Length: 111
Length: 131
Image (cartoon, rainbow over all chains, first blue to last red; front, top):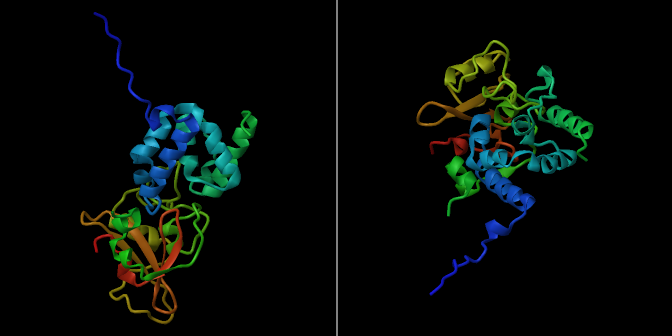
């Protein structure tokens, strides 16, 4: 007698690309925290933390988003990259923070 | 099923408010309450947000009152509009942790920025997180 492991049918999560996973988590994060003002609650959300855990694979998507409009991704990029291109006087100014990260992105080969 | 806005601002569930801007991640409720649209005001991470110099970065009503006082606001006893005064209201949850602020308009109605989403015009207590 012989047996083979039963193959589980792939789920949507198993087959999604990095960007699909990123966008799914982004949608969840925005749905839950979009109306909040507390940055500690916003970055503490499990979906945001899961995005951080995806590492630098998500940096291109964030840089691309910043090219379209300023975004709270500026709160994720320091943890993802270890960089800090925002000057102290611009901290809190999401638009200027986004511009600083766009410059950083160009300097590091992200378009 | 309860949406996020209903969970955070249950008073808005009746939709008795007017959206007055597009979504904008550049500023939040505290910034909007003081008339700022290019900073995110919150006493959280020093690398993430703006908070007035010298005011404790604490999520307490005292710290929030001190932040508003840096711009000349003083405590007042009524939400009734008074000529010559601009009023703001700070809302906290049941544990006293500030969650939101709104600014009074000339009409006596109030305006709020909802996180990174839209500005709205509303009755004051519609944005009380405890209602």
